[in-house]
Image (cartoon, rainbow, N blue to C red; front, side, top):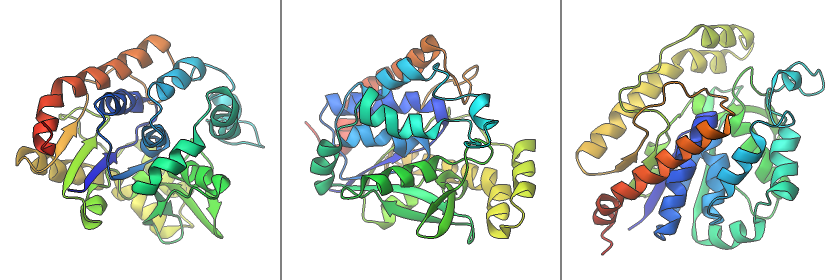
Length: 288
């Protein structure tokens, strides 16, 4: 058996995923293969390093901190990013709420850990294994995967510009299957009834990046790809071929939510939902 854990993005909504992953860790359910995009894989690294509670701690401490995110960073000509990337991706994991790089390196030896990033020139997804021997590159790949238009600046890696992996493959379960996973647990950050619409911001972003024709086209097609991926994943789940963990309701929870009580509630929903599903999950995995 090769178990794949698939992680959708969703900015602050990923607190649901953090609760779900902590519940899996408490039950010692360790995936052989972890793949995600955007905030999904950024926070999924704490699952790999087996740091229960780390994601919740940093979220409650720093999401409402002006150093973490806000318009002042977006309007700063030296940053031009809603999120303060140096604070979020360097100061927090290295000093304030330490990420256990050694544990990640140790446990990922037996795992495949992949972040999806979108090449702006080709408009195609690239699946990059997170390195354990180059932590600067490791962080920049995560940075690139999170780089949603208008919220972040593109990240340059190996001479190419990259942005949010969720633009092209918002729920990368197909790649997990192609890589040999015969069991899947997918954690989503939207309820089953949700359907993504092509909104004004996407149309504006496609015009902003019109010099990158393929990337601009991928932005326009994003909602259709997202809805199609969900439909296919739900069919697998309904046939008993995958486990899908998702919130029951995300209304009233902002993409950039920072209120501690809301973040805690979303985390608790992920944790409690997964705990309730544990008999089903263990049966699916063949665990007594």
